[in-house]
Length: 139
Image 1 (cartoon, rainbow, N blue to C red):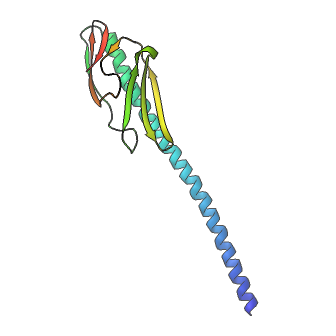
Image 2: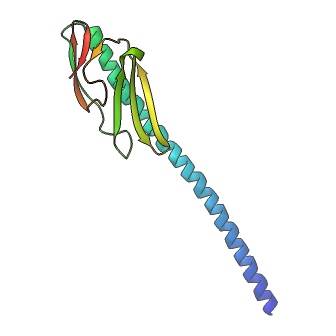
Image 3: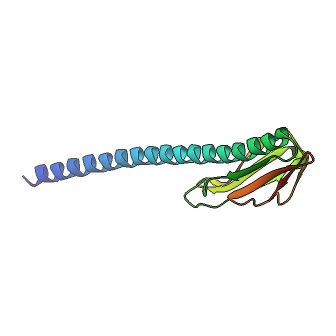
């Protein structure tokens, strides 16, 4: 009778261990998918911010002398919050850098003009763009 009890206990423990392993595998897959979804969301937010800045710079430049636009961009890209927007006139790019779950990331968007002046790095969340004699100025 002791042999049957031992066999039942062994079968139960084996089944329990197999179920635990399967659960851990599914949890790992779900976690990976969750992190991937968050990363895609963060990339989309960074892309949107870069586009907002670039499209407004391009619009002020096309509008001609005297054009003014006040631009507001979102407070955060990630749950951590902070990000930096920099403009590189010589490369005709707006770049958004941020800390993501998967490490430091960046996204760039093209500009049509290189004639820019003002604070072009660490741009604030609200800023004014002015076209002065064809040059876009950040204030």
